[in-house]
Length: 474
Image (cartoon, rainbow, N blue to C red):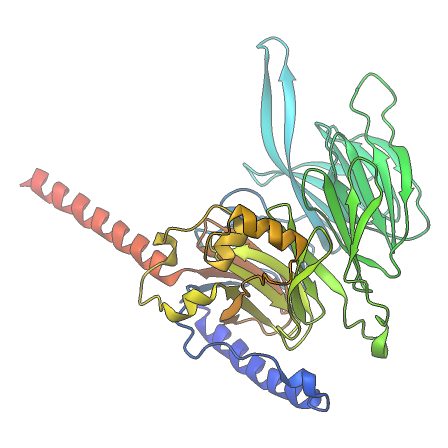
């Protein structure tokens, strides 16, 4: 464990006390008391080593991956920080914004060298802020290489556009930019702030504002007027605010709402093909108990959805195949497949990350060994369920035949070190998770057995090198 062990222990103690209070406060309703406890000593939980990253001094807005070992966190402290999963110190602290940094995005800037006949590519980072600027940073040097402010409004979301060297930004309005820093076009929407922008396919984007979705075409020919062309307003609207907007396959994307509904949309026609989890009484006690903050596409045929405090597995045909109603003590904010897909990780307002996986793992303690050494299936759903699923079984799953029941993931572990809501989770290198919470800290969760193996290998190499040096001297 890192030097932040004391902080982690304090967070754990605070969390135990707060969860106990929450448990008592909700004990009036019997179903609120049915949250499953994590296994004692958690023998199947590989994430036994943590590193706490405390560089930020205020609320963290989000974290985004850059590549296989780097990620970025942005904060209300006016900074963005570039981290490596291999160490606990920042690679770069990006200073310059005069207000909270609320979004970020990595891009590849392509510049063509006509004389040499090839393209030069540079990896860059864009950050958007409430100070009404977008900053462009070099990920090689950490230097700010451009400041964009012609839009004269705050920025809440950034997205690639599907067209080389063009990107979109949203806040009060929708903006199209190129990487030379030129504001190409501004679209004024329905008076609501842009919350999500999704690059769909073929230079088309879908934009969410409040409970509405609109589709636009991004120009892909530089010698014409580069403006966003409105394709259509998608209908019907969600009943409440849209919370998540993601691709689920090459042919479909989906949106989820505060009212709990998940709509599956066709990329080709921009129409609804299916509505999942459509609750009639979604306004019970005005706390939106069925809201879907996040969903996760699996094998292009299935969706795991965070439904209130629970987790549900849907087929894209519309059937609910599995539903754990009380997976957490509070609402679930994010879902992620981790550890090479062997666990479904759920992040919650209750301050915990819970790990769900195949029931067969419950009888197989790790005993200091890494689960990554096991042979596992290629399919994501098969990895999570711990066994192969035949083509016939998949057909039965998609049709939801009464005689066939999907194997249910079980609770295998719980990661507790945040002292506030866990907002999001990233996964790296199979054996590393990264989380951030409302407590203003970022945590690296690592496979303790795997990290021990790596350190032992490094020590052996150092000892071998030293012995060769000694022999050469003698």
